[in-house]
Length: 305
Image 1: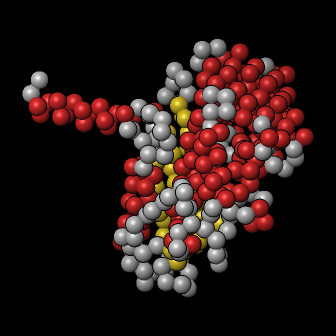
Image 2 (image 1 turned 45 degrees about the horizontal axis):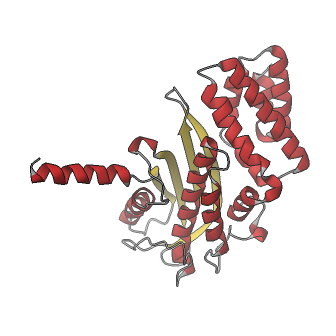
């Protein structure tokens, strides 16, 4: 084989073997940023964050290119009185493919409102999991947050394919929480920063009292959603068991973040699944869902009659 073809062959093999875990799209919006800021800064930031997520190897696992996890990050910026410092919200969305279909089932659909960071155009986005907080807390806060959600996305994806398949990545997210940047205007990393934040999500996922939630995620996707094409009735019965288990979990552990986190982005999917059920099962599903997903209670009652 000619030398050039050997080189190309090994380059191709190396690319496949080292394929990154995420297929992320980052969108930076700036409608609330002062007009006197150079607008090219935000395009540079968007490109830098996209490269940060997609070009970094987050795990030691081997992912084929078609196994990369589809995810979206929407960073909505607002300028502050301090030079190069921004407050923002971040919308994180992730989905995973459903077996034998082209459908992507939602994994994460969460909005984080507690973000303040410093960024100057062409600033290097650095992250070291052994030293999460850099010399400048506001500068390192941005990459710490994006790394945290990268591990969360990989963890939820793993948990949906195998029992407790995300635990090692939730531990990595927890490590970021434990070593997170600290300082003025930095929030979301501490238990007293609110009841729906990065601290509590990691805590809930690693709390031994809540271990059944890992079974809920696995059963929902592998025994339920992935089986709909093969045997819709059996899959729907498994999904009903998931709802019953979630109902029990919520009664035993009321007002946990992870219970509400589960339902974000899933109401349409659940309605579609149970709209084809028997009248009795539709009524049962509507009753449980209205109780444990209060935000969408009116939809369940109206659409699962």
